Every structure is written in structure tokens, then in C-alpha cells.
Image (cartoon, rainbow, N blue to C red; front, side, top):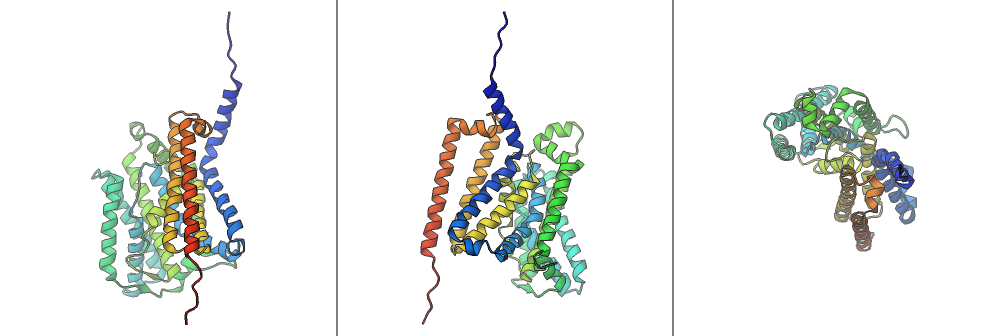
Length: 378
């Protein structure tokens, strides 16, 4: 006598999870974008939803798009790069000196600056792969080295007033609503998307991040592809440094201090796993847009800069912690997103996120209450 078991609810549940999980990386940041839009539609609809403000958000996001593209490859390889801010600043200063001190044409100076950034990224990759220094320590140490070189070169000066092509890269427009930096950022993200999805570089990057030992046993040169990723990261950080120089029409040694935090947060919020082996270029793009929208919303609400830093940090920690926890549960076989949220631990995590959200709202309310339009003096 044979007995059969019929578990349609479990099968249906697994089917839902299987269909839902591949899109989690883009759904999560898009959901947070919708929450920001809904919040601002209540608080400041007239100011936030102006066309000019949308352009400001896109210009701010465009600055981070090249770095987010490259950082997606680096983090997918189980790496991290904390030196990108100093690479951007040093590359911008090198470009400035070539133009102002040596009379090099702006076009050539830009290309040399990007190549110089790639060289700095190559050095990072060699330090990590050949000297076997952990990525976190290696890039943090090189961040100090590169920032020190920038301080030595600039000698405390602010280098300003560059040729038109430099400012066009940073804030120019091809038409009434097509900023050149946004075009550059979108182009780089599209190239990164196809490189990740359709080329051997993307396939090997994901394979190495999933299991470096297994990838090496199959004949993949793990160290070589790590060097490729860090070299690309250096080049994209240098491009961001050129864009920042053009945007401000100035550069100094202390520029771009928070590039690393902003870029890493955007990539992880967008669904690229810190554990490696799982990447989403579309998610990285959405993460960049989300963080730019969030910072712009705080500015629109007239929140002081210090309160903006507090709110930004809280949102980043909450979103990254939630997504990292979901990825851990997925790897542990907890039934994916829906299954992990239905567990007692999942309910505790959701309550914790709720407390974080309430705390953030309280901080915003306090900042808004303490910040008002300055009364005229006299």
C-alpha cells in the first residue's frame, strides 16, 4: 500500500519565493524610493517635485554612478575598496597640475588622470593579491597614502578655474534636460550591466565571489581578476574625480571624503551581497538614485547638515542590515524572503527595523523643529 503526500501550500510558497527572489535586489531599493516619494509628497511636494530639483538629484547621482559600477565588481569578488575618495582627489589634482603647471591640453590631462587612477587601482590589487594584505586593511592603508600624496602636491591650495571641457564634464548640458554628467553616468552603468551579464569578466567575477577555491580549481586566475576589478575601480574613481572637479570648477586635497561610504552603501542597498557571488547592476543604479533622493529630501526639508549625516547613517545601517540578514537567511535555506520574514527571528528583525524607522522620524522631526528660516538681523 503506497501513501502519497500532497503539500500544495509548500509548493506554492516555494514557487512564490523562487519567482520573487531574483528581483529582490531591485524591488528593495525601488520600495524605499517610493517611500521617500510618498513622504515628500506629504511634506514638501511643491519644492521636491520641481523639474529643476529632479535635475539636481540626477546630477548628484551621476557623480557616483561610475564608482558604483566598478564597486559592484569589487564587492561581488568579496572585496572592498576604501581608497576611492583619495584616488578621486589625487587624480583630480594630477589633472589640475598637468593643465595649469605644464600646459597640457585639457583633453589629454583628463585621459592621463583616468589612466593614473587605474594605476592606483592596480597598485591596490597588487597589494591585496601579491602581498596578501586583506582588502579592508590594504585599501584603508592606501587611502592614507594617496591622501597624503594629494596633500603634498596641493600644499593646501584650492586649484580652480579650468577649461570649458572640464566644467562641461561636471555640469554641462547637451539639451535643456540632458546633463552631460548624467549621460556619462548612465553610459558607464549600461556598459557595466552588459559586462556583468554577458561577458567572461562578469561570469568569472560571480564564480570567484561564490567560491574562490572552487573557481581556482576550475582554472580561473582568481588573483588576476581581482587585479582587473581594482584597476577598473581606480579608473572609475578617477573619472568621478574629474567630474567632481568640473562640477565645482575646483579641486583640493581634502575633496571627496565620503565617496567610499556613499558608493559602498549604494551598491549593497542595491542587492550586491557583501558575502560575494551575487550582484545586481540595476540594483546598484537604484541604490545610487535612492541615496541621492534621500539626501536631497533632507536638504529640501531644511534639515541642518549635521542632522542630515545622522539620518543618512541611520537609513544606510537599517537598509544594509535588513538586506544582509535576508541574504544570510536565503543561504541558510530559510525559504527565501517570505519564509525568513515569517520566522520568530524575522519578526524580531522587522520590529527592530520599525524602531529604527521611528527613531529616524523622531530625529527628522527634531531637526526640523530646531532648524528654521534665519530671522533677519538688524
